[in-house]
Length: 281
Image (cartoon, rainbow, N blue to C red; front, side):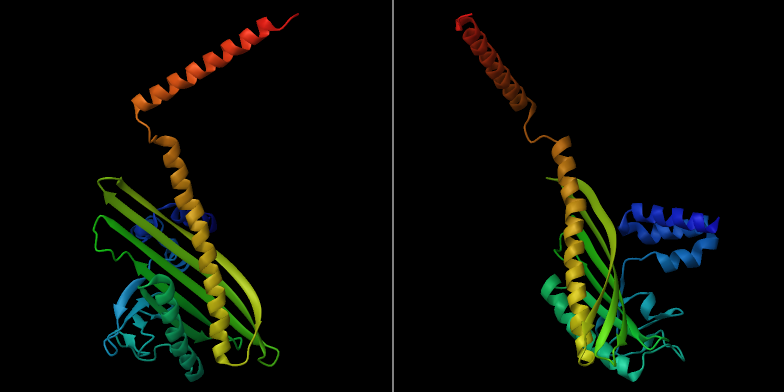
């Protein structure tokens, strides 16, 4: 029964506005407390922002840098609030994590022109390693009538093979997008949704920096594909609905067009009848 309840709960969460995920998730957990752990592990929530006190830099919070009630900063590698024996990556993976944060910070600036990015990596028991690349961009126009947010969560698993000359990558990406507009000239509306996709590929490796290049290419391609799909599904569909439900021509203009169409149809019918009479039998 719990399996069926979880499927129904996840299906419901996919249909609810992404900007209200936290509230809807809390309400579902209140309704079915037994699904609390499964829901928290299965439902991606909008990314929250914290500040590293040592570096004075912002970073993103998620399950992948959380240990209990504390979160690890990718800049100082320390937990806030401080805890003892918090999970931290090995020296090799930590160095790779620092390089990845630098690389994806440049990627974020080029593609999003603002926002915040954070990368977290950890060792796996099978000899490989995995990581999460997070990007958050909120509307920064300064206009309270227009708000929006883009949250992308990319989880990648890396398994080296062939004596470290090749690697297999498995990427799972989730993007949450929402927009709110309340300008008088266009009315008030909310538009939002989330989309998840996954991809796998093998690629050659020469050193640890090659992993950043390979992962970056996968994420770049994945985000472009998801962005195009969101544009088609949400914006394109919204435009179609608006065009079908709201006419840009007023009632007088439409009545005039209908009258012209009727006059043209009557004239065409009269012409056909005249030609038919003039034709010898």
